[in-house]
Image (cartoon, each protein chain N blue to C red):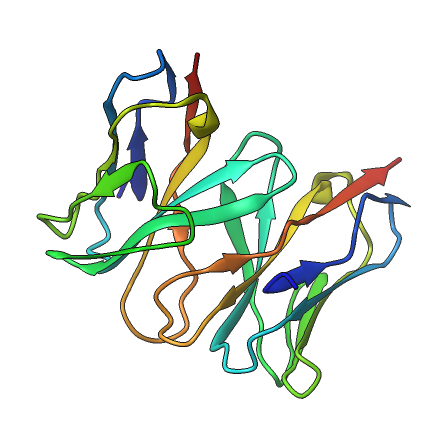
Length: 110
Length: 113
C-alpha cells in the first residue's frame, strides 16, 4: 500500500464548478499535512497546510480527519487558472521530509 | 531574496559520466532535500539534511551522494550516470520546527543517454 494515495484523475470541470479531491495516508503518526500545486513542467508550490480544525484560503478549503487518515481539498468557483496537478503531501514522524501522493490532474474548461 | 536556486536547468550526460547538481537557498533554512520526479511515480526523496554536516538517505539514494558543508548549499552528485537517472530533480528547503511546508527550486531536467 502506498503511503499517500490520491483520487485518480483527471478531473475535467467547467468554470465555476466546485470540485473536491481526496487523499488517504497510511502512517497514523504523520505530523503535518499539505496540499501542493504543480503546473506543467514547473516546481511544486505550497497551496495550503491542512489542519484538523479545517482551514480556508479564499476559494480553497482543506480538511484533515486524523481518525480516518483522510485529507480533502475543496475548490469552489473553479477558474481556468486552477488547472494544474494537486499533490497531497504528508510529513512522517520526525518532520524532516515529505511523502507525496502521485497527484490529481484538474482541468478547468470554459 | 532568491529562494531556492538550482543549476543547471537542463543537462544531458553520457552513461558513466559524473556531475553535480547545485542547490542553494538564501532563507537560512536548516532542512534541505533532494527529490526526483518521474512520470506516473510522483516525487521521491533521494537524500535530505537537517543542518550543516548532517545528511541522511531517503527512499531512492542509490547512485547519488550529498554533502552539506554550509547551511546555504546542498549539492547532489551523480557518481556514474545511468539512463535510469533520467528525471527531473528538485531541491527544497524549509525552516526547522513548526509545521512549515518546503519551498522548491525550479528543477533540473537531466537526460542520460
